[in-house]
Length: 204
Length: 204
Image 1: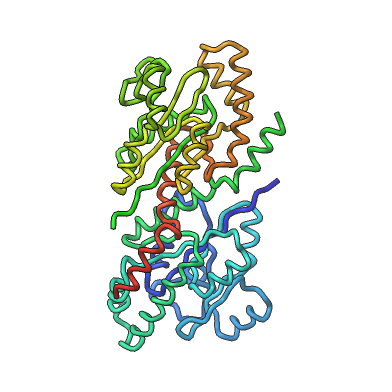
Image 2 (image 1 turned 30 degrees about the horizontal axis):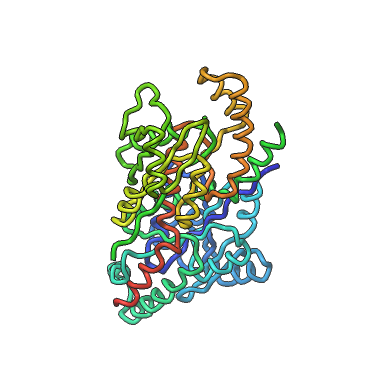
């Protein structure tokens, strides 16, 4: 019997570096899980490719996916929709392979309801002030937007409660290594593997 | 305030290769936990050093340690005592460093009672028949002893229930890597780190 894959969910405050950690993970040849590309209505940033970084959708297209129940989760964030197409996730898990989602915190709690035994990882800033620096140095935001994001970040750090693990994004390579260690460890959790050994005893 | 270190307990059936995995771990320069040397009344095997592999004790010395409550756990196994001197463990944990114990399954359940939030890892054979091969190829045991050990191994695999993680000892390097990943992951568990972030919110 094929065992199901693990659903790995990486989330955290806006600006903490989720996308950078995800790119680091998928640039490493020994990363053994598959990336579920999100859909979004936001415009591509420089260098972002459709179908690789996101599936870029119009607002109309996205709302059709919502109506047709094609999304595992979705959220509206700073005026744009972000969501996870459900079909790829289910097919990959059913084939026994691990799937990795990088999503906003609003979406993560929707996924938790549908996949309670998923592996939920919260990417945390080394400090809130560091988070502010990162948002400021992106250099494209007004002071009001920055203040609004800081408030959101405080609320999101309080949302840590819903997660299994917290990974501090001190350096992207360290954060990526910790995520990989967490996935290895989860595959070793007794609850997940015990039935294999019970079978071994029955057979002999 | 100094946070306490993690207590890491590696255990598993006799013959599964606990000592080999432990040696592999402590031969790697980036292993960030400290080895708690056990005490035993069994005779040194070739190459084993007092104070490095074990503290080798007479039966009388060992029973005095039991009476004076100097052992975190102890077990009698194939006619010999094995135990963990408690003082080193407590001092190292209090100093915020992780301590690694490699002990028999009988001892592990005693430690579980005293350190319920320790990290309990069960080292498992790839299959029971493989376990039998390993015990046979050590080449120093009679058939009755081998059969007795097989029965014990079946019972011990059923004892997996008490552990947090199961690491299959398919290859010693893989098993050691999984143990290290588990320790990294445990340091990221939300319950363990959440209070740090709550403090961060209070300070700002």
